[in-house]
Image (cartoon, rainbow, N blue to C red; front, side):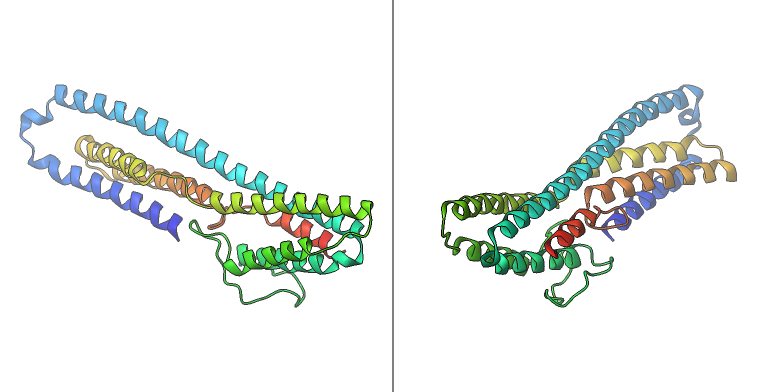
Length: 267
């Protein structure tokens, strides 16, 4: 809903700016409607439009880069889980409890991070963990506790020979990478858009559409064109905010890498 709210706010403010310009124009003295004044307004509008277009382009590129980074990190996270599971499988039956805990953690993480998608089948993981896929928090603390428990059980293993000791050391190193990747993803779930920066951009757009209202001819086609322009900018803001919140809204990170990891853990 944050994405829709941001877009609606921008759209309404732009319409208010246009409406203000349309209402104020008849009240202006005739010298304020002179050709030279209109030319000056058009020059200022052109400058602001250039700035606004540049900022919108930079924000779009930044949000897309952030979205792609989170997606790549999720694939790395899933690969780390698969590699850890493969090492534990080589270790043998003593590591089965750790694998079961990792399996339950992965399934619960999928269910809570992507609540709108089908849950993993089975009753081996808690189903009451609420969705925490927002811009402030990625996971419920119980998921972290499940992962920490798996790490504690892993460190309690006792190797009987040099071969199993090497596998145990490798598993612990791989588990540490999993934990680091998890915290990186949690931090990346936060929005990166600066609110003062976003408010400044909105103010520029408001001034631009206020100027449109001042100089636009008073006919239906002009007003419809301005409204469509406001709608287009609002939709661009919607896409930017949605990309900047990779776990909410219609545009979300794919769950397929985590589901692939869960499939390997189920083997």
